[in-house]
Amino acid sequence: MSLQFNQLDINDSIENIFMPQTRVEVAFNLSDTVPIVLPTHVLSCSYKANRMILYQTHPQILSSFEYMTMDVATLVQKELNRVVRLGLKCRIDKFLNNYPVSEKTRENLLLVEYFPPMRKINLRTTYRLQTSYRFNVQGKIRFGGATYDSKKHFKVQDISVTGIGLSVPKELGEQKNPAMALSVDDNLVIELTLEQVGSKEQPVLLRGGVQITRKVESCNANSGFIGARFIDLTPEDQEKLFQYIHEAQLYEIRNFKR
Image (tube, rainbow, N blue to C red; front, side):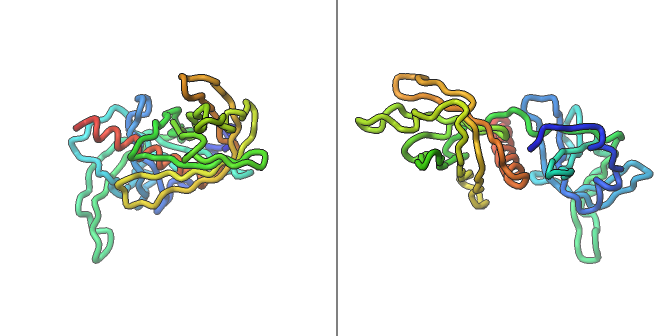
């Protein structure tokens, strides 16, 4: 995703961005190290009153929940496939529980007051997910006619929305690991499978390019380290990766509070 951004990106009116059925993220305490970000959709808007009704999030926001700041944001695609996330400061005005949205359907909703102007929101923080048994990342790398597999040549140590870190064994049995020959500035094709053990969700599959930006020959007696940045993930794959990492953040938050 291009990092270019200018004022023209937010010249659209709120009415053209935050429309009924728009997918949005509700973000609490953005300045925190790990803000809470929850996806939902817009049900309706009253633009003259600066109000919108959102479907309740999952997990639900409780009336007892305390927060310092709140923003509502959504992704907007611009020219040349650029994607920006625009948002508004807001607050929960009222919890509309068991609210009739049709003759046969009732939903839990949030009445939100928002405060213009729109601005660019950066939810894709530098948070780096350390892989684990529950959030497990497998992958393959292709370079120069060779294929390197995470089951043999490397282990995905961490991943963020901007890049990936690999722990690379120096040797495979009695032979040198050919993956240790990869160098800074090498461009690689990478395929990743993002698994969330214990979830009903299917593994997330990503494919794109990475460029090696850092290499440490010897992190310890047995392994080196390779750091790489993503260079051409599609907007759709960027969003999948963002959601996967966000689910991991929520899992950490829930378990921290137990």
